[in-house]
Image (cartoon, rainbow, N blue to C red; front, side, top):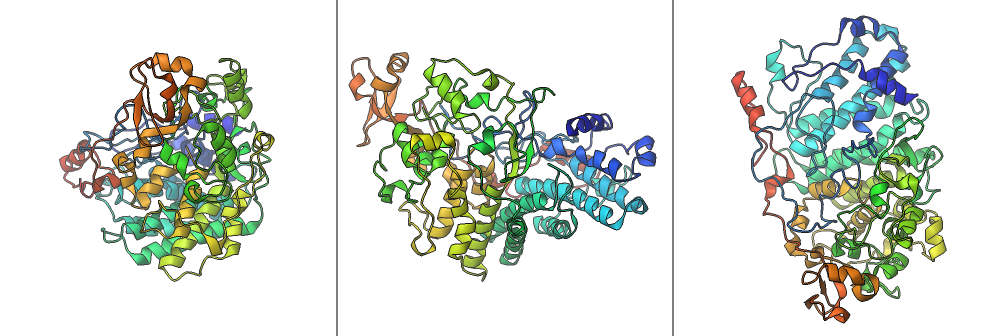
Length: 612
């Protein structure tokens, strides 16, 4: 039914004008007759759902979708050739008056534009104008909903551009001074966001029907937004509009929001990690707060599963990422006591690492991946196993754009990791209570104790040992400026949320963009340990005088047609080289010169992003 509502609502959307805020008012039909009660407001709110909860996209539309939606721009992946660069100059134009959201992959966020802010402000203004049409409870709930989408949009905009103009209400078409106001500071904007979050957590309904946004869903997103800004304020200290007071404030809000979800006891880890991404219906999954449902009968389908089912080429993870995965004793490979901890062949990795490795990566070389390790996180084990063992046959439901596995939009796994990270940061730097074993058991250890997927259990995979507060592993590769506990929390996020758009945002907020300089870590030019004479003998001939492996002693050997027996080692990613030099300005995006010129033409000033 919600899909039909989306279509009806789309007919009400008006075309955009040239200016970022210069959009026509709602039609008389809408304004005079639309705000009669909750049904009308719900219809309007449903128009936000496809904008912000894209999931796996629909058909070939895949903005913000995993695998092909910009999630490979981070340090987890290595492409052949030169790595994708950061911007090195101000673009001619970066702005849109459209309500649609396009993914700016280098920040996994939106481009410069405020049409969606206006959309939320229209709802806020009309609720206040027609308040007598609603009960007090209904008014507060729907105002909370309007605030939620405004919070979402501004959190994303600030994450990409830093300082942005804040619009309290709908801007009149003749109010050019407001339309063309300069940026407000990120602290001013995020304090406004904070206040709206506070209202949402007090007033949004805890239940507004199946698979609708409610207080718990909103709280999950709030924990994400507040963790981002709190840690940004901490790790970017010394920059304009960053200080300890605001870091503490936002981190405390992150804990409060996540705690609301966790303390409700409505959600738990009763299902396998794999089930989150390959289920045909997530309605019964107790870890999922909100999801996007796909239905072949309604022709609402996507291709993301087929991209993971063995036949499609993909940008693979690098050896650096592979080495970050914990062994099943809960320790990094270099200090693990698990037998085979130092064996990086895929057949061994899937059996000795945290079970999420098995659920994400196939245990055999696949040349469709440019690093030889193939991610099937969003396809069933049956789908890829069928493809790999039949010489290329595909199961019909995992072909093309006909995938109907549901997509989790907000899930408990992220929320508990937001919670434990915010708590750990508060404990380390802002006088918060020390992390206890109970805190770890409610978060990281609850995740590790999920049921195994049936395929992982059948293969003999074991759950990862619990993290103990008295014996947190000290990874020899740990950054000197990061405590061991926070290092392990960050590792858990990396294992948990591969391909979900979080990694680049984590690097940005932690002030760790230097991880994107691949010359600092040679493992980022390598894949897993391969035995080409046994696993892919024909591939050697296809790559004559090109194919290289690196032996355990660091020696690189190229295949010349006569040395097949030497083609055993870490796969050297073909022609992989570092990205162009980037600088501190890469933490935020510039606006386009056309946008600055448009302001100037009308007699106003738009300040360029800091350092640009």
